[in-house]
Length: 325
Image (tube, rainbow, N blue to C red; front, side):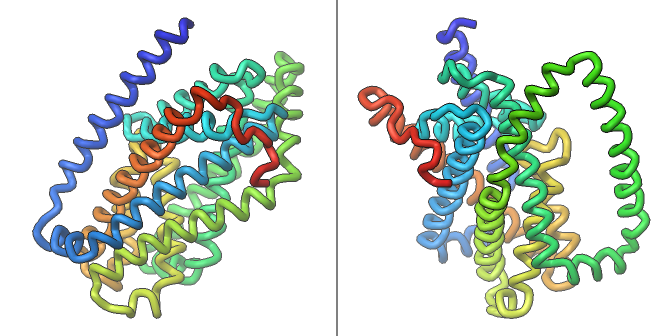
C-alpha cells in the first residue's frame, strides 16, 4: 500500500483517538470536590502527568528492545518509540485491537523487520505485561485479595476461570499440533523468534515489575489526597499497589473496553469498598484515570517533538539494540 495513503490513515486514526479521549474526559463529569482537590495539587499532578508519560516512553523503549531481539535488527530507538506512543493513543478507540495494528508502522519504516516479527513482539509484550502484573498483585495484595474473595464468595467464579484455563491448555496443544502439520515451516519460524527472547526474560520482567509498582504508587498518591489521611500509605499502601496491578490486567484483557475504561474503576471500588467511601474511591480512580490519559498524550507530544527535530537530519540515531538491556 502507498505510504502516502498509510500516512493519511494514521492521521485519521489519531484524530479518531483524540475524539474518543475528549468524549471520555467529558463523560467523567468531575464535580466541585474533585476539582478542588486537583486545584490544590495542580503542581503535583502536573508532575504526575509527566511521570506517567515517562512510563509510556519507557514501555516504548522496552518494546523496541523486544523487536530488536526478535528481529536481530537495530531499529531506530526514536522512530520505534514514537510509533509505540502514537499507537498507544489508539487504545481509546473501542475494540482493543487498533493500537496493535498501529504498531505495524515499525515494519513499514524498517524494511528488515517483518510484520510477523512485530506481531510476535506484541504477543511477547502482552505475555510480559499480564504475567508481571499478576506477579505484582500476588506479591503486594495476596492476603487482602484472598479476604475479599472469601467475603464476596468468589471461590466458585475462580474455580470456573481455572477450569477454563485447564481445558484451554490441551485444546491449545491440539490446535498447535494441527497447525504444525499444515504450517510446519511457519510455526518453526515463530518458535525460533520466541526462543530469542527467553534469555532476556528476567531483565524484561524486572523492568515491567518496576513500571507496575510506579503506576501503583502514583495511584496511591492520588488516593491519599482524596482521603486526607496518611493512613492509606501506612496501612494499605502495599495492598493498593497490588490491587491496582490486578485491576489493570483485568481491564487490559477485557474485550472491547478501550484502555480498560470502566473495568479498572469497578474493580478498585469492589476491592476497596470496606476501607473507603465510594465517593473517595471513584474520585481517586477517575482523577488518576484523567492523569493517565493526559500522560499518554504527554508521551506522544514529547516523542512527536523529538521526531520532528531529529529524524530529518539524523536517521538511525541511537540504534544500538544493547543500549538499555
